[in-house]
Image (cartoon, rainbow, N blue to C red; front, side, top):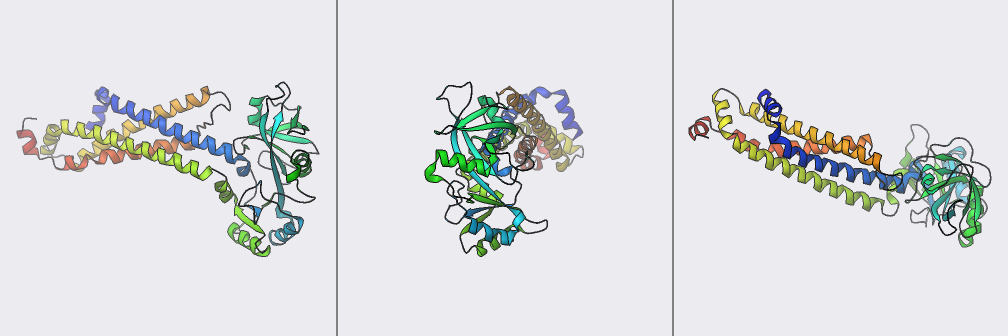
Length: 372
């Protein structure tokens, strides 16, 4: 192994091409992963921001927040199972917003949420009527604290009193106010979809420490005799339109990229092994074992993969820093960069393993006698 590392130090030029190709593949892995994370966060942030374990839809809503309506009578049944203090209403409506300083037809797509249980980033009770918090992504559209923006065709006024992060929903910036604000805005702009007094689109349910979320969900649906469909937050996130298909597609592309990395390493070290047949024969004649020789090959593959992953991570961070805010949904998170680097290292070691058979079959007498 020491001889293999010394070769890396003294003859780095012969490994430059493989490192460059793997660095490009590492960058591709990290960019694909970052795009997947960005798209997922932009579609599911509002649900991920909730401080609850379960979300309760009406039974006929087909797991859609927009279709769901939970009446006061159903809510009382849910509260009987979960506890009165553990169920909180949630409502939403998607509307275009007119922002001061923009043209009258330059609408900013938004989703107004009415809540009782404060999402992550907010504390305390919901703000008063007509006052809302905005997702920080809306700053890129000119939304500022203290502004009054107009929602929907009825131009319902709401005042921005602060910001929170990471709460986008279905690719749109969100606004967070009281259920009363939501009901008033929805009634003014979508009268055919208005919620009656005490009606919520869904209920967020907290589960006591040590309790089973799935057991509570099943108990709620039994107590309401099928009038509700209760999901864990992760199940609700996966039920959002396009989220599951999007993740599957990106993961398949990432898998193909990792397979290409395996092929690149396999071809590169297969060529190097052929060039070293004579050297391996001499080393075996001097007492070196096949395991020792292959460990040197693995060490070189690991060093090349780590160098490529480092280059790819640095390029990904530079790309994330260079992109204008909210232009492309790309997130260069530490977890994604590390997991992509791990995929590349594993792919390199697997590709390197294809050289094992050739190393094991080296015969010292034949290799030396052939004059190679």
